[in-house]
Length: 398
Image (cartoon, rainbow, N blue to C red; front, side):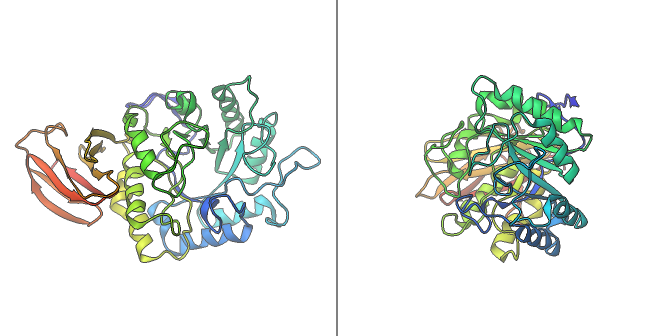
């Protein structure tokens, strides 16, 4: 069903995705973000075990999702999708049962075109109904649908709409993740057919990378995504059951992603009410990684029930930026950000810019330091390192 939600265009509500989904995806775990084309039954089980054993499920990490790695290269004799029998010897239904026994949700990847985006695997074009029924029979809770190899004479909006209808017709509540890379102004219609919709091209575990992939955006790095979304005013489009997806979190991907870059990534995804789907390893978290992905105060900003994404307030030539997000209780989340690649920058935001009375005395809490800054009036100011953020909660309602 499509319902109208205050603060956003529309929302697709079949019972799943009231809040932004949180979990894990195979893409960059025991793999180089798809380059090795690797995922297995044992890998998926071990991550599910790790999430529960570390209590991450209690923080909201509930989805165990596989990307373009699980399928055999042909359909079976009856025309159904089938998993790679070597990598998934017990099949998808048994794996789904295992994940559900942990109290978690299970998700798979497919494509609206004739083939998926990698390695000549079958897409769902011409098989939307049978594939939806297969996913429901296996017990899937989440389906990501990519945008490769579609017929040129048919629009994304029509094809994703058909797939959405086929999934909903099974009677099983399934969270539909629409991955068409931000083209055709998806922010204006994605929420009609899916609970989450990709806003730009694929994200890589880098800070800057030229925009070489298909789709909208300024590039594939974290810094590029922040700059692109800053031009969109995403608070105009998001809300319950209707989430803008900047792509996976690449938290502390080895070598190429630093702690500061990862913490900034997690901060902005949370400010945008984006899905928090971590593509790197969630087993045996280091203290450093846990300090990012298990910060309950920052997660609470992402999971705020109002569901309105934060917008950029200003963008200075020095690299200084300020962003804010309204919260359900009348409070505000604020990010002070230094986009400069080399120099520290002093970033400030005034009460006037935040829509507050200039003389208002506001309790401000630093969400990464997990401590109160104190009672502040007129403006908040902080010197910030390159790529870094200060993330704060303003207690307006006190």
